[in-house]
Length: 426
Length: 185
Image (cartoon, rainbow over all chains, first blue to last red; front, side):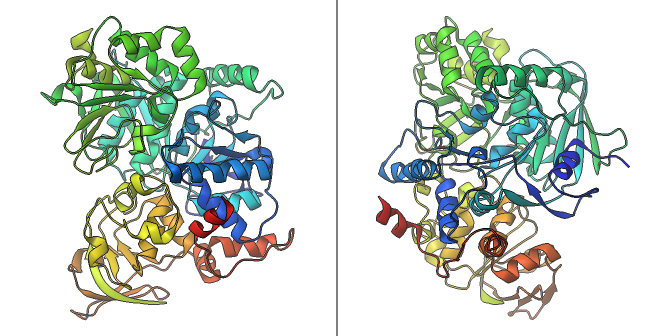
């Protein structure tokens, strides 16, 4: 009996010769990370046990991206805990404002996380790096504290679900739509504790940014990890990132699922009929075709986040917004996910398009996605966002509402002032 | 360990944003976080809950963000145990790691009424509805997790391991994060 890519990566990080779903293992980590919300608790716990050494200062990432640039004094104090710890332990992967980007966009971009690696992060969207063919998953702060000290983490080997995507993608349908559609089909706990392995002819042609969006939202179906086997698209993306940011590294490990690997479920989708998807409040699983939404007026449009704040996302939004004006009542907030995306967007003239359309173009931050800052919703307000969660109060007031979509739908909705298909404004 | 208190019922897919909204995440002080526990699921929960009370929820309790602030706020407000049909995986890790007892029981979650007097024996995995007298036997934790619970959570477990390579000495009483921050900055 063979193994899946997830099982192979987990096994390669233990001394075991065989592993099976349900088994508890302790595995060695290639990288672990925390942000300005989760790392302060981890650092506190690390110090509480009197630990004096980190397992490997180069394998720790500290990214103050949630409430930064510090939105208030308390947030500044939280972020400072990261800066002090990074200084104390000489941690190179600490990203101060100016270098900082949204963690799950930043680490793949800089080849800090790579195929074949085992990564944990005290942030639920750590599952993003599965797009590179890595095993990565979100954990809590105490897990991160233990990782700082030992370089290990405990896991229950997850059951494996294979999702096969067949057919041809329609125009304006992206990785974001595929994952929203999938969550709509299986529900917010449809993959609870399990792996979502994405494959099929559609995935093989899917650009890396779209793959990152898909794996990013595996957690919204309750999954432990999302993963895609590496291929030529992966190699090209990772090699370019290494060349630019990590010239000292020249190789990485690739794993593929065996033909006779065990899956608890195999689910096939024909994507040809899938249209751009919008998830209505208050669960990502409330996914329907954008055309089903008639007259949903929006007060705010957010384009950014670890799900859709990469350069290809901004290019799509700019294509829709070029030469147009948004409705006067709409607040359009565009947040490039990293400094590199920011620079590229300026260079390519995208920033100018957003500003001339009537929007704002702001510094990288998780910002409004989790109701932090840079665009909090008031009572009764409605937003459409390229983010990942539309829970009650997620972007602000408990009586506000968030709809989730891809960047094209978000941009089209800004122009019309209501939820709109990109076909309408094209 | 035995927990005893009144049941507070919640529905499906209660997420960590509802348990502790992000607007309160600029601190990690348990006492501060306790003030806003379950705020966006039930704004009056903090006023109603008494030490020892038990949360009884439907499926997928604790889904969403990995924020450990969620189980910390539940523990700090005095909730002694959470019963649910199922738990989201990061939340489940977090409760094991910080030592907040949780129990999976579909039947108990269906039967138990709001305000019922409940007793939970977390070691035996036994839930008793003291009002109806009905008992619910649940699956014990897997052996691996039982060991971690027995030693008092992940950091104690790790400390034992670390003692072999470096001088570590766990501080018995959890120092509130707030004090530490004030001292340092």
